[in-house]
Length: 138
Image (cartoon, rainbow, N blue to C red; front, side):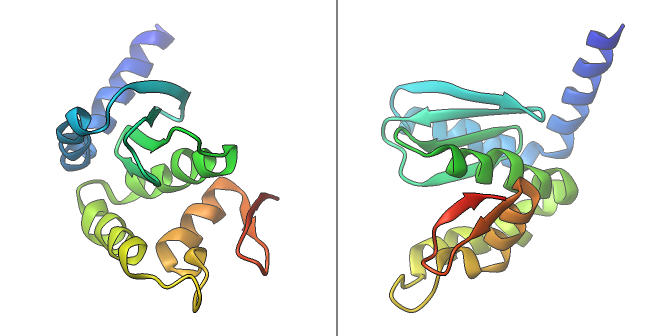
């Protein structure tokens, strides 16, 4: 019976996160060969050989093939929580601002993790940032 409840919960989460799931599926052909690196919290995290950085979209996260455990935790344990909280609004509240920040930020002036979307993800994932802007587990 518990397996049935897990599948029901997963199906409801996919429905709640449908806009993100659609974007994640559209990205699939552009990421090259994928390898599953994490499966937790109703989220599948894949390393993509053509992926740079990381992105969480509903129940799917993609990271660069040489990503650290902290990057994977940031995506899977961090952004995934916001995805579940905001559902269909996630792309507007977290996803798009985070993407713009990743494109525009200047590492000489700011720490990447100072932006609200990244700070929230780190908090949910139990990660901290050093003064040199490096991630570490708390």
